[in-house]
Each structure stands twice: as C-alpha cells, then as structure tokens.
Image (cartoon, rainbow, N blue to C red; front, side):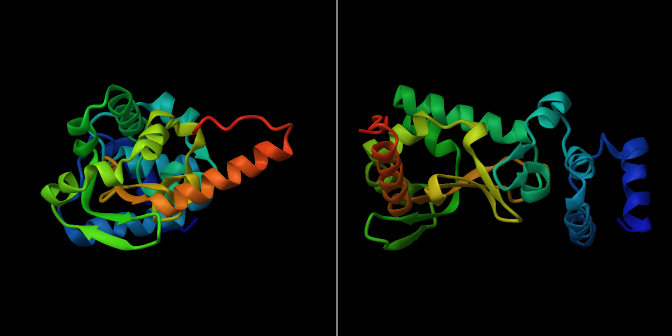
Length: 210
C-alpha cells in the first residue's frame, strides 16, 4: 500500500469514523480510488466503509466480510451488515407476500431479464409495479425466501449476486445501502438446471425449488 493510503487510513482511525458521505465528488472519487488500492487488506476496506456510515456493526462486519469472490467491503464499497439488512427484509417480505416491502428494496432503473433473455430497463416504480408478478414469479419469490448472506458472491466494483447473477444487489455510494438492481430470470433457470444436475449426480437429492 502507498504511503498516501497509509496516512489516509491512519487519519480515518483517529478522526473520521464519525464522518458522513463526502459531498465533494472529487473527495468521493478519491476515497473510491483508495478503496480499490486497499483491496489487498480487507481491514483497510472496512475502515474506509465505516468512515461513510453513521451507524456500524463492527463485529458483524468483520465476521461476515468474506464470501465467494472476496471481501464484501473491498468488492462493493459497503459492509456485510448493510447487505444483511436488505437480504433479511427481502427474505421476510417474500415469505409474507408483502409486495410493497419488496418494492422498497428495488433500485431504479431496475434491469429485468426474462426467461428468454430479453432485457428491459424499468425506469420508474410504476413500471416495476405493472410487471411485478412477471418479475417476481413463483420461482423468484421462492429464491427470495431463501436468501442468505453466506451464499452471496461478489464481483469487484459491481456488487453482490446470487445464483449465477439471478439477483444483483448494488450500492450507489460508499458505505451505503444495497438495492436490488437486476433480476435475471434466465440466470435463475440456469442456476436451477445446474442445481438439479448436481442433485442427480449426488444420490438424487431433491432440489428445494420445485
């Protein structure tokens, strides 16, 4: 890590853990650059993330930072606890059938890819509501009901995802709240097919999506 990054992190430890998100775009970009530089040390990524959060769950974030693909804090720019809160809300909303609570976690524009691979960008909540039952059909609702942070994967500077990209949670600012930004029915079908194939190879165990 460069001397400049090290000095910045020292300042974070001593002075900026109570700071909020930088209003200056240059400052925000500088922090994003430092976050990328810090990828080799997740603790540094967490310090940068926490500096942009008024409330933080330090112990949870440290215990759950690593998932498939690397450290959540380094790859996404926010903390495990922020993802956990959204995941829990989506899971509970799907189990209760609460459409409004699901919609509250959706970001705009929402990229929806249907089972045939057709892509649509839904620019408004009204557009999402109009095709809600198509986007969140029985299979997608079943998947939401089983969301678990430990099964999430991350892609650097892209977000967190489930089931080959069937669901993507993305953060629009460092330390911020993830939003559901992509629902890919085609990818879910591919993930289900792969899971069924795996079950057949492993003593024919039933896949819990049927």
